[in-house]
Amino acid sequence: MTTDQAAVAAVDLGAASGRVMLGEVDPDGVTLTEVHRFDNDAVQVADTLHWDVLRLYAQTLTGLRAALARRADLTSIGVDSWAVDYGLLDSGGALLANPVHYRDRRTDGVADRVVARLGADRLYRATGVQQLPFNTLFQLVAAADTPTLAAADRLLMIPDLLVYWLTGQVGTEVTNASTTQLLDVHTRRWATDVIADAGIPQRLFGPLRRPGEPAGELRHQVRSAIGADRPVPVTTVGSHDTASAVVAVPAVDGSFAFISCGTWSLVGLELAAPVLSAGSRAANFSNEAGVDGTVRYLRNVMGLWLLQECLRHWREQGRPVGLAAVLAQAARQPPLAAVVDPDDPAFLPPGDMPARLARACAGTGQPVPDSPAAVVRCVVDSLALAHRSALRQAAELADLEVTVVHLVGGGARNELLCQLTADACGLPVVAGPVEATALGNVVVQARAAGAVRGGLAELRALIRRGRRLRTYLPTAAGAKAWSAAATRVGLPA
Image (cartoon, rainbow, N blue to C red; front, side):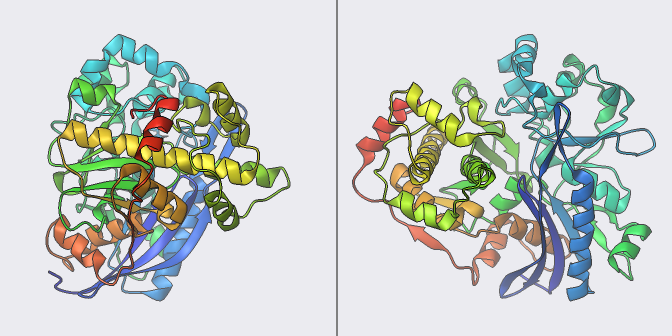
């Protein structure tokens, strides 16, 4: 399968932090070295919540400089990030404003208006995308009358914006484009009818790229800034971080489900074709583009955001809580004493998460968590419950028998969450790799460079070599308790 060796840099931008990873690929597997990590903090300016994308770019250059210091023979660079958000360029290629954060309130109520005008069934059959209030479609409609949109000549998703700054080449990678609700799910081209009927300028949408295709070479100024003494290619990867993470799911066959667990939990299946039934639309599943023509059939679950916001709130209140200690305490709390639906819109914005959890529990007649350990147990139980609901619905709608769940990403470190997910789903949960997104980014680059051959099965076999994974087996008792808990908060039992 492997024909050579390669050293590549993976720029992996998450909603809470970013990192640059050096990936070294040879016949024995993939070695990852974190060369630079940095926070990704939102910035509130007046009434608008922004991403500080200029800082992210500066930190990316710092990381690439560190990668080159370790491996001057760097073969390639690839960039991935979260979905739906974008930057707007003017006709001269200048960024018009810092991108708006998907948690900003500008889209409040917009989705309902757009869906009423365009039709929910039509939108789903055209794009196959889960209706979320912050989808790019709704962000652009919310911005319709702004001077910024009027002056915009081109829209670039966040990873494509960084690739443009690195190379000077404009393009939109298809796995990230598929999250916008503006890409045709059948042709994987821009859904021009939807764009036109939504009143969005067609000029914003440029050429599409697919994972493995070249995206250009580093500009001369970038080479100087990071100490590169020769041209360095930038390779298109699965630039939606979940697309790259799913590449790195260490599955042996196709009967698996995945949970890419970080700030969000992306819960679903890898399929050969989209599922566009009325039941799928009603259950709010997305059919997003995957690497090698696959479909990521999934639902977004709010994820570890709830836990992150609790920890942040306690820290800001002057009573910081250690994650490891509070998870150990939470494991000793009564199971399923109080649960919430993590996808309640009340949990989407930043703010006092413990208070919102308390209100949700009180509103459903459940005990209100009265300590950090009880709050964290509520969060972890609720996430496991949401994982169970999404996986059961996905398997039923896709008519696929699932035998194992692969949980990748930062959540794979959370032993309590992994065990509770196994218990809730009644299936083995294989946890790891933690750095799945970076691994998927790396192997797609290595394959494009000729250092790896084969399809997803071969890439996954390479990733499994030498990788430490942990399997959590479901406990026999408790199925009725999970069903009852789901009923309490209106999730499918």
